[in-house]
Image (cartoon, rainbow, N blue to C red):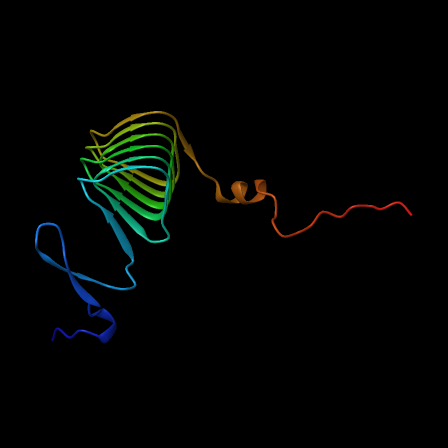
Length: 150
């Protein structure tokens, strides 16, 4: 009834600082920054990111989940973001959920937005139009034609 495929098995057990054994996978699809972690610097992740600690820098990732005790000072860019802590900086996300415990100080750019009653936001909201954004960006890889006098 409950079968495990071979690709679902952990690659090796690892003990965390509390002495508990955790299963890890060599092809991890998410990263966790614990509540005891404080980072100064930008974070770029191709995988999903869960932050419970504090970050002083910009964050770019596929999907972001922010815990209630977390503080981010910097810009956030993600495909999807679920924010529950404090953010001091702009937020750009395709799908954005702001939970009731969140405190946002900065402008918010979104495609789809959900805000729980009780959330605090100081800043402007702007809906991103994907078509306008794509048209406004210059096309990379296409060289401009230059006329040469002969």
